[in-house]
Amino acid sequence: MHALRFDTHAIDVMVAASAPARMRGLLARPPLQAGQGMLIRPCNLIHTIGMAYAIDVVFLRRDGLVLKVASAVPPLRFRGHWRAHCVLELAAGEAARCAIVPGITLPIGALA
Image 1 (cartoon, rainbow, N blue to C red):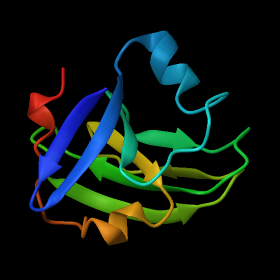
Image 2 (cartoon, helix red, strand yellow):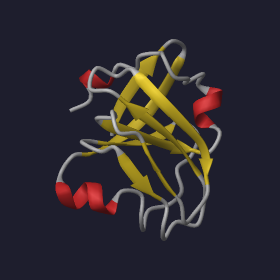
Image 3 (spheres, rainbow, N blue to C red):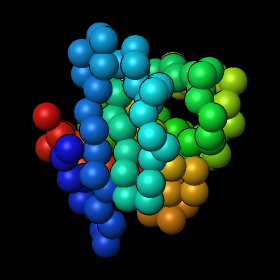
Image 4 (tube, one colour):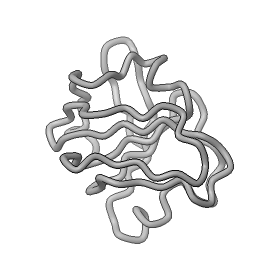
């Protein structure tokens, strides 16, 4: 786990960078809790097929600029952004709680 710290918030982030880790994503894992997330890179399209809970999906440019936030994406859905380099998946409601909106920059460069 890596800590993503910005403003007054901190999120413990799992990084999925290898092909097997990106394909698995959050499948067969316990639901994310408040303050937890998964960064998938490279990635510009996700699905929630096989999941039993909704998630927030944050689409980011390589430099961490937030391009789009898809809130509470339910199971059996696809979401994407053609310019995204990576995706931060959070528990439903976490993006709003952490004030993550398009146009802000998250310090993802520090995540290995």
